[in-house]
Picture (cartoon, rainbow, N blue to C red):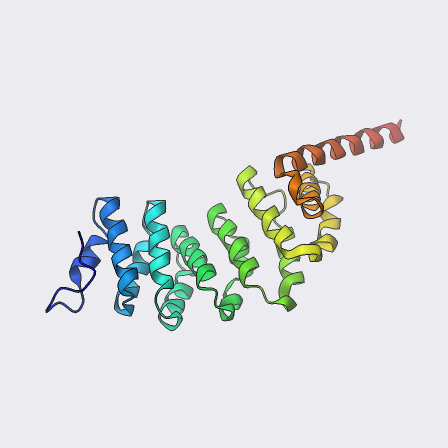
Length: 228
């Protein structure tokens, strides 16, 4: 069991730092819990560094919790720096943690490049974080920016984008209109599914996608009939 209190004579608590990189995920989880319980700002760097490389989901979640236990003035600058990392997981975890910290002053750091990040997990996390932090005056801009990603990726990515858009509310309707008439069938179907979810949240994403595909197919048939 890792002691919650620092070892006498060792203010830097090397033992906890070392435990964060132990081979056992349970040891790393315990270390993150101990650090969060102590809420020692002196261990902020160790937590942030581990977030960038930790392979276990549950440990990453505990690392994020531990960071939220620290003063925002300690964690936020370190997390913002991670958004510029070349490592995708560093960017993703920093975004996730910023959403949990909930400091609205970090909104300007959610840039267009993060919202369009080539890594799907980074982009998905950026969408969720942006929706959590966006000021009222920026909601229309964010809706338009998110709409540029319609049709992107596999089901999980598209569902994440639809949920982010729907969370913005009716402000998304004007930005969906061009997508509904897009020449790309994937974009059209995704826009139709998102609009249906906005109007009927209980419909379910897969049902909305199926309906969108039927609408697209009917439109093609109508166009084909008109051309004959």
